[in-house]
Length: 313
Image 1 (cartoon, rainbow, N blue to C red):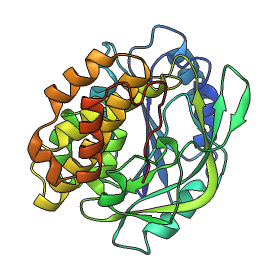
Image 2: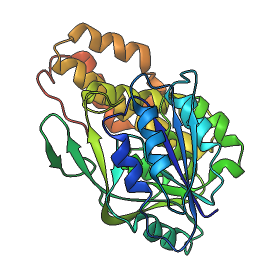
Image 3: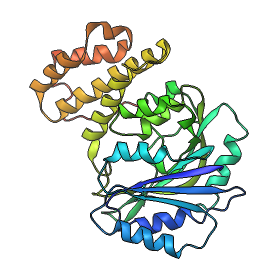
């Protein structure tokens, strides 16, 4: 099998039909399969998936797992990814959808000709459910190729656009992903240890922002905390010394973002408590610039009051 599409879903009755239909109309020169795992949804997600499968008469092999017990997002993701037999894996969750029928073919055409490329992603449109409008991609994508050192600064890859080399020929990925509460960003970083990610400047998918999404519309607080948690966990993994240094460098930067956030929320006492709990003096060697900025905030926690900006450089 050339490509496996990995889809996890939970409570997506309003979106799952469109998502499935968009995956099953891909125009490819190769065979692909669709692996779906419904994490014991309490709405009509299961009913709609069954109807779609029963009505589908095409060539795509569909494997559907209707789980009897709720595993949770990460265990369900690992469970589903483990069943993907393709040389390459594409991701699309049950509330997103594809809009380019040549998405898979374009990505396979590139990655199959570039052995050092482990992941291909594309541009995306964002559908804001509450405002009923399309928004441009949230990420600032400045170049075509990204290495580990680039992505560790900030994740600019949208999950529903991704196709990557199947890592399950390497059992280490299972243990890697179990350390995290989210799967996509850590997965990309795992892949970029041994290859690069390539950006195709084409819009191939739609990402939905809605109140039922795990991270949609969750605000900067969740975004910041998630990035810090991922980096803190990664620094304790068995990585190269160079990558550990890159992680620590980025972590100091995100600590600065966090304390600026606390200051902007007028939580001045929390600024000093957070810095004491998370930063060590030895961290100055990893990121001197942001370490000094953090020290200034420790001394003058009101200096960033009312200001919040995520540094990107």
